[in-house]
Image 1 (cartoon, one colour):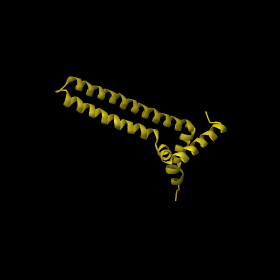
Image 2 (cartoon, helix red, strand yellow):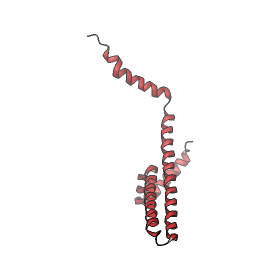
Image 3 (tube, helix red, strand yellow):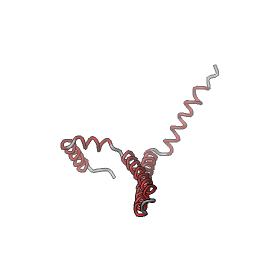
Image 4 (cartoon, rainbow, N blue to C red):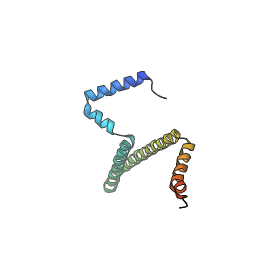
Amino acid sequence: MPLSEDDKRILEQMEQRLYAEDPESAKRIASTTLPRFLARRCRWAALGFFAGLLLLLFSLAVSWVLGLVGFLVMVVAAVVFVQNLRAMGRHGWSQVSAAFHESSWTDVTGQAARRWRQRFGEGRNDPS
């Protein structure tokens, strides 16, 4: 659903106000994409998983409570990692499906057929 002119104007005013009040944050927000944000969260989750594993391995001999804490850190980190991977997958599929819906099947096959004819067909039928 496209935005109305009033909504577009309000968004532009908000963006201009953000750039005027805090240009550093505005630049950081503008440069951050959803896949980059999710990948960063996956890296932190992987780091948390390995920290939990180390806590589990080194503290299990000392105290089973600390070993349990390490295991819980591992479980939480794994859940966060999987959720972010799924979100990255959904975002990727939505981009692919949006690109597919923008062009019709006849456009795709027509372009492929045109390239095929240019590459192999029309220019090579010279009898000379």
